Image 1 (cartoon, helix red, strand yellow):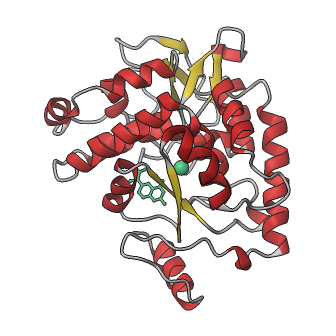
Image 2: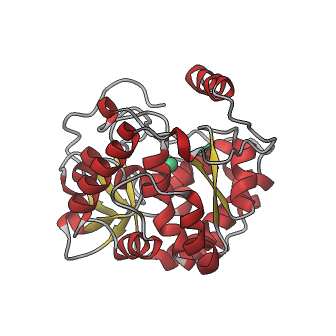
Image 3: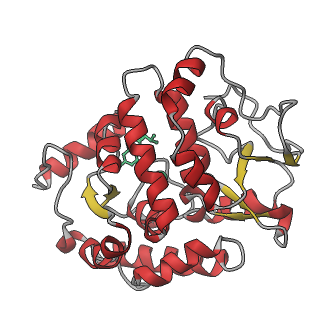
Length: 296
Ligand code: HBI
Ligand code: FE
């Protein structure tokens, strides 16, 4: 865990929020300030406007079905009333990033950890760690979609099973390039893609960049390729992977990961911006504005 996260946990402890062994807490509704609600309202309005015509239909359908309040931070209970009957998923409040093993255990049991606190007004555009807006607005709308819901569950089980197998980086890349920064094919849209990843959907800058910029590569999704590709956590992506549709994730969810992870565990990963001979390239990026320092 990072130093800032440790500080965050200490803050929660000092604030008297009781953290259970599985890192969940009760969402402290009375701790949201007027500023927190205003930040939610601003981000919600900004992203719902911007995402129209840019995000995949399944996401918009999820936002509508969840009945997310535009005016104030929603109560997690009210969201569970919608999502649990639909797909069996439940959201649980957490103080922030939780250890990998804990995170995977939640996913494997159809629980999605949602950070309870909201970013500050000076962090509307960028925040390195997940806050309530990213976790809730970015991730939860797709959890009401049965195909995506099953993919997340299968991912959690696979990650849990593989935890000790040197396989974590491979699985983290799969999560990164699908759940966080995934694009989906749509011929009628700019560069032939719509948005579906939570890290894009919750960011104004990356919503525009991922779909419209000439800089990044957009490459058709391939499971092994994705698992071998490094990623950046501190800048916009150099490469996005594009699924044909959510049914493709359904197939991924049924993959037996074990032999794949064993085979790929010792291989050298590919740099984030590299195009490979076997790639099905949708757009070849200009690379303009890319950071030149080493990939993470
Ligand atoms: N904890 N709260 C929270 N949210 C995450 O997205 C998260 C996490 N812990 C670990 C983790 N993600 C990573 O291991 C995944 O990106 C693979
Ligand atoms: Fe996320």
